[in-house]
Structure formats: C-alpha cells, structure tokens
Amino acid sequence: MKTIRETKSLRAELSGFAQDGESVALVPTMGSLHQGHMELARLASEYAERVVVSVFVNPTQFGPQEDFENYPRTFDTDRRRLSRAGVDVMFAPTHDEIYPFGAERMTRVSVPGLSLMLCGERRPGHFDGVTSVVNRLFNIVRPEVAVFGQKDYQQLVIIRRMVQDLHMPIKILASPTQREKSGLALSSRNRYLTTDERDRAVELYATVCACRDQYLAGERDPATLEKTGFERLSRAGFEPDYLTIRKSGDLSLPDDDSSFLVVLAAAQLGKARLIDNVMFEMPG
Ligand code: PAF
Image (cartoon, rainbow, N blue to C red; front, side, top):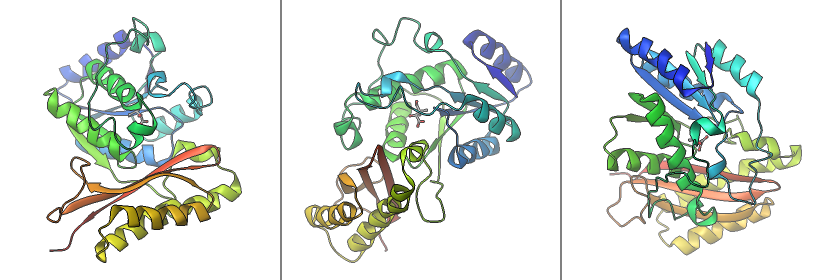
C-alpha cells in the first residue's frame, strides 16, 4: 500500500491505474478507523480494481465548540489496518492540499434544505463542510465509485443529492452500519464513552428500533413517537436531540403512501454525540 500526502503524487499513481484500465473506488474517512470503515473498503474492492482510502480530519465540518482538536487521530494504526486489508492507496493530505486558499476562503458546496434539517439544524455549517471536502476529494481522485456508511444516513442522502445535482459521474454505494453484539453502532466517537456509558449507549439503537415497531403497529403521531423515545433515552442518561421518522429517499415527512422509511435519532451521552438510524419498508 502506498501512503500519499500530496495531490500531485496521487495523480501520478492514479494515472498509472488509468493506463492499465483499472477503475478506482474512493472511501473518504476521517481516520480513527474501526471495523465499519474496513467494511467500506471491502465493499469498495468489490466494485473497483483499485481502492483509495482518504484520511483527513476535515476542520470545516466541525463547529467552533466541537471536538476537532480532540478528534482521535490514530495514523499509524490506520495505516497498518488499511495495508493489511489490501487497500492500494492511503491518501492522507495536509490541510493546505485540501484548502490551498485557506479554509475561511474555501469555495463552498452546499446542499440547501437537506443540510439544514436534523443534524444540520443542531450543527450549523456541518454538512456544508462535508460536501465541500467530499467535492474536493472527488475532484482529486475522480473515482468511478465512492462508498459511505449508512450510519451517517443524512450525510449519505446529502452526498447522493450533490452527486445527482452536479452531474458527477460517480456511483455512490452505501455500506450497512456495523454494530457491536449489543447493537451499539461502531463509531469513532464511541471512544469518548466511559465503560458505564458504553453499557447505556445500546439504548439508542433499541429506541430507534422501538420507534420503528411503534410506527409499524399503527402509531403515526410524530409527537407521541418522539415523546416515548425521548423518555426512554432520558432514562438511560441521554440528552435526546431528535427522534423522527422520514422518507428514506429525501428525508421528508412520510405520508400515508410512503413505503421506504427511516427512523433517525441523535442524542448526547456524556461527551459523545451519538447518532443512529434504522431503515424499514411498510408491508404491502
Ligand atoms: O463520514 C465521515 O467520516 C466524514 O464526514 C467524511 C465523509 C470523510 C468527510 O470528511
């Protein structure tokens, strides 16, 4: 596996792949890799001959009070994992490679509407940071395929929309959320949980699933669904942020005919802001 920090060197490597007629899949990450990321890379390798994993802790998607400084950085372990997994290139650019004119003056890519709701409402500017960096990574790597995790469901929907709206010739693949046996979704931010919080964190997925079951059993009132879920989360020590059922395609509110739905939730537990979701289909 090659570890590359500069766009110029990456381009040279990529043109070698292109000359050999090999397709490229990109897996954008912020490092601190866990099994969920390794699944993204595995899925990528099924769809392209060469896999590039980018590792870049993107400052523009963190709010001023958020954990950019403390975000776990585990470069050497990440490199070893990726190399063992047969990834071709780890692209770990410097800040200046990604934002040559500085992050404050960056050209922004924004997906209005979708970026302002749910996590976007609580984390202003977050998704603009995500789309702005993913756009740059797409332009640098020019992959045929890019893989994202379903755990960050809103991010996935926003990136799909960006790709469609900007006519980018990139196939976006979604990789299912990887979970611990308890149901807890794997996340780099789980590192912030104490042992006791980790035990209680399983309630987030349990609550999301219970909300789905309540909806399937006929409960349609968003306020009732939210109240039941919030109570359960609060009992487990969370500060709930949102719990909602949306159409899985565009995150709009469901109507009576909606078939493909997703329950989305976010809640704070100790130092960690956790998110989770579950997709489901209405019977019939
Ligand atoms: O999901 C993430 O880790 C990040 O938001 C991404 C897509 C790598 C952009 O920085």
